[in-house]
Image 1 (cartoon, rainbow, N blue to C red):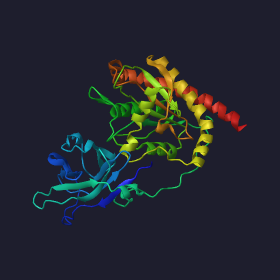
Image 2 (cartoon, rainbow, N blue to C red; image 1 turned 90 degrees about the vertical axis):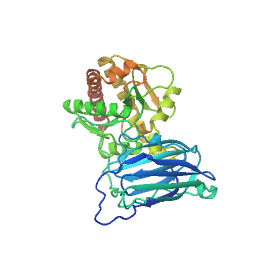
Image 3 (cartoon, one colour; image 1 turned 180 degrees about the horizontal axis):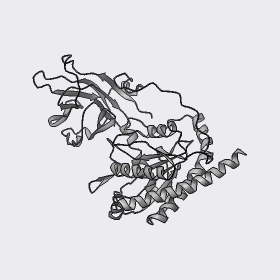
Image 4 (tube, helix red, strand yellow; image 1 turned 180 degrees about the vertical axis):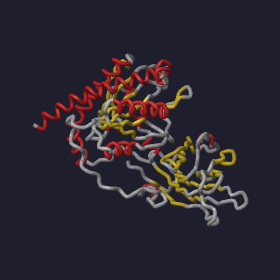
Length: 406
């Protein structure tokens, strides 16, 4: 089911004097904030802020969540998980969602409806308090289709522009454009072990890989160049807008149970190679929930058929790309997972017109892999292996493209 908002409000701030522009970042004070259960099955959120800011608030289903977007609220160094006191809220998290905007997400134990939201400003201190009240969801209202708040000038999204037709398959006459996608970011740190976050580590490696590719004559493009949240579909949109020749998604997961070590390269498949791969795909796709999007059951039958036709060309090329990267990494870093080429239904690999692979550079749950991934020398050798792999793949792919044009 595509995301649905049970109730949504676009709200500004209580209007201060015109001479008081909101020019600085607001900071939340969790010690002065509260999250409490209300009689009758509701929840009350009170969030103390150093100053009033524009915001919007709405609820989502599957799973049920309360989402609050803020303009210019700085959550750095502050863990929203400290918001406690409600048995009806399972978890809280916050972070950057896009430049100039942050998001607070509360995972609710059951669907709820938005009853009220306001952000009064204290005229003496200048501070503000966001107060949101949720009540039990009305079944009739919950069943009605709805959507998130309408886009406005405040949210700042530009009007969509028509994209040019996709580029012709590269025949070697121009540099290969490689979109590098460092996984996770912002509100979604990915796997975390020993003080290391997957999002930060893959961003560093992504930048290093981009530099190595540029030196080798490729044309690299990053889906994110800083610690910001980029929804799954947006990552694919970035690749398509960049007219990418191929797409590399970079990750370094962690296992809750068992032990695994070494790099793995994934290609798209409706059925996962094994149960662990299926669970991995599910974990990586969780940022679709953070963005309020459910990617399942999105395409109708006709669109699905058209995408399957497109993949008859790109999927074999993705498979060859994965095998080349396995060989390149094996030659330069040696240590690979016991089954180095696997498949799973990763949403980020679902662009039907761009050869795409997901590279698990290692497991943060493995001490050996952590040492490798944090080693500049190991990362340089890994980047060299990927560059070598892309060079070999590009040569073969261009030769095949030339034959097809004849």
